Structures are given as structure tokens and as C-alpha cells.
Amino acid sequence: MVEQYEVKQNEDYFSSIRRDVISFMGKNKDLVVLEVGAGTGATLTELKKTGVAREIHAYDLVDVCKNKEYFNSFTVDNIEQQKELHFNKNYFDAIILADVLEHLLDAENTIATLLPYLKKDGAIYVSLPNIRYANALYKIVVKGSFEYEDYGIFDKTHLRFFCKKDMQKLFESFPELKIDKIESNLKSIKCKRTTLNTLTFGIFEEFLSLQFFLKVSFK
Image (cartoon, rainbow, N blue to C red; front, side, top):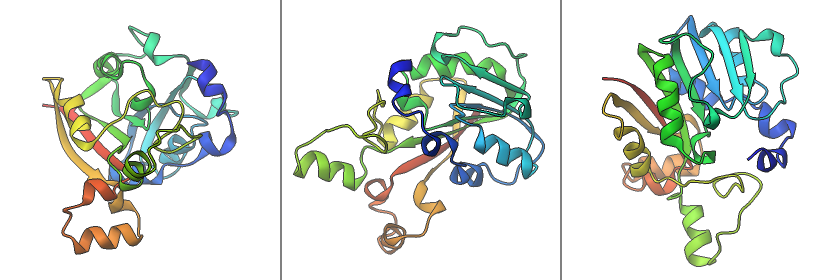
């Protein structure tokens, strides 16, 4: 898997601030946060600057961060190969998995690995690309192609694909978890698709949404 990721070790891919994820997290403050797939840590850095996070811990397969000293911890390793992590149990208020699970061979196992380190009143914040997005269906059904690309839904390092129902099913397979909310990325942007979704009362939301965001916590 390292070889796959090395293809994409460029600043644009790893250094963007996920403001959509930050917005989805709400108005929480003073959190202890772990982000898996943190890249350069830009999102975590923003969370700390704005007071959302008190501690920031990063975990990524690739080493592209040049200021690791800013973080409470920055681990470069393959999360899928870990049975235990080097953190105290019940430590994190929030764990961020922003466009990570689709890159994993065994997403369920990684979630199970992370759960002991989440506080009982904490939450996991997830973003996942939606394969049911109209443009993706057009490419497959009309153009007859599943050609992989450098980024986006057909990212060449994606190992799994999800519709909204599959995202829900993934977390519902854990009896100790509940999905607090699931939202389309249309709520964080303004475009023609947003207007169309409003005009059609959300009937076609799953076809208009590039991504979905999930907040998951313990029951």
C-alpha cells in the first residue's frame, strides 16, 4: 500500500484543510483529537488554532508533515497493521476519518482497533465518497468505463466503494455504536446541485452528493 500512496505524495493532496469536516463537527471546543490519514496535519492545525482542539494527534501512512513538533504526537505507520495503539484507552474526544476508510483493506478491523481509544462520550467523524453520485453513474453506465483517476471517487488508491446505505451498514455492524447524524456534502457548499436538491425536496440527494459525513458515537 505504501507504493500506492507514494504516487500521490504531493502538497495539494495532503495539505488541504478539510473545512467541510470541521463544519460538520459543530461548535465543540477544547477537544483531544486524533486524525487518521492526517497528511500534513493541516486540518488538525486549524482545529487547534480555532480552539476546537486542545490536543492534536496525527496518524498517517506517509511522511509528508514538516512540522511534527507542533503536534502532541505524529505517528507515521500503517494503521491496518496495528492491533494496539500507543495511546491511553478512552483518551480521545474525537477521532477523524476523513476519506480514509475507502483506502483500507479492512475498514471494520481499523474501526475496531480505534474504538478502545475513544471516550465513552466521544465521537468519530467520517467522510466517505458516494459511488452513487450522478457523475460516477454517468461514467459507468453511459461511458461504460470504470477507469481509475488520480483523485476523486475513482481515485486509484480506493479499495472500497460506498453508497449511503453501505456507509450506514458499516457502522451499524458494531452493536456498541450508533450513527448520530449523516449529512450530504451539499450542506457545506453552494452550487447548482445544492439548489436542485432543495427544489426537489431532497428526493435525489444521493445522486447529487459527492460525499456523505457521519458522526458516530457509543450507545
